[in-house]
Image 1 (cartoon, rainbow, N blue to C red):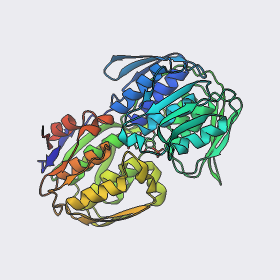
Image 2 (cartoon, rainbow, N blue to C red; image 1 turned 180 degrees about the vertical axis):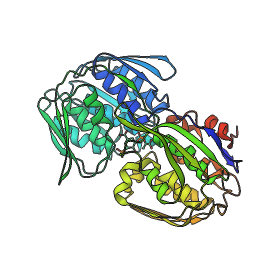
Image 3 (cartoon, rainbow, N blue to C red; image 1 turned 90 degrees about the vertical axis):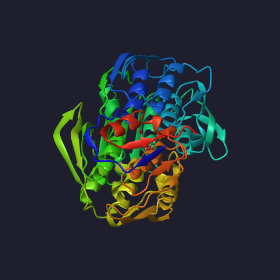
Length: 441
Ligand SMILES: O=C(O)C1=C[C@@H](OP(=O)(O)O)[C@@H](O)[C@H](O)C1
Ligand SMILES: C=C(OP(=O)(O)O)C(=O)O
């Protein structure tokens, strides 16, 4: 896939539904008693794999129309044993949260995924679910394929997450659903809180307290979850791509409506505004208990590099790849610190961005926990290189954004991973005026 210098990007970018909330809508719907209705579900490969998994565990999951789904749940503790291996594709969120969901039921399930997912660490979930009484048997290093034997007589746990991870926090809370008594999760830094909000929405008794040791989340086990009607907000992590493209392509003015701006997700936009981006929130409102706004992004030739505060990392963890592209078009250095979690995403995102930026004439310094991009200004990025996508949608989309404003075209070796989270990326961007080509070789 190749993108080249594009005319001004103009118009309205209707990005798909939020991936995190889409996964959780299917999981919680499958554990409720009765029919949950979902609109605006992201129909990307990651979420479709979760829908198939919920069917395999016995829920009745049906697509009614575009983004419109129905889930008839089996109740907390009601999962059936799947007859075959559960293939979660590329989805870390999918596999880790599903492991949590089944860990406290007396069933056994075997999980696998694509080459990217099979390389990612699962110990961060199998360690805490072992405390409930679940056993797991994976490949060396806690890698998939992996078999999880759910606890027959689960006991509730009190668990402090050793890394800032909403997936780990969520897996523990979901496992806690079928344990008697109170399960407590403590996180030192706040990560995305969709699981907490949605569990409360489904009728679970859950409380969150900010204390000196961090956020303390207490869930009372074995509730009956009540089915819900869920309108999934649009994904800020997908909105990041048309927003960032508009900031770096001369003459652009793009509106990205109805974006969920939960503070645990919106760190990128704060960062861009601090860099001097012409990015505004219009029509700010609340929908389904979440802050929502229309984002308006215009070409911003005067952006300056900044040091992104470490404590903001969790709220923009998936957005560092595209931020590193914007940073190349700013002047001065952009320092991204406290970002070691990027090394265990779909790819090692620090290495993937560093190598791809270098191939396109941008200087980057990196270490275990940081990356620094040396900006070349609004028309100083050479481009002309090919980046390896490494089965990572965000890497592929980030380099496509880069090519829209660099002097020479930018290619990625594989555009396929984009379908995991943003299947309409290409028509959406070309509809705004971007030039993206696919080679058929
Ligand atoms: O809980 C979630 O929905 C997610 C949590 C984050 O992962 P970590 O928990 O590994 O940080 C994020 O990177 C991922 O895209 C979605
Ligand atoms: C890290 C991501 O997803 P996951 O962990 O679900 O594969 C992502 O979407 O950027």
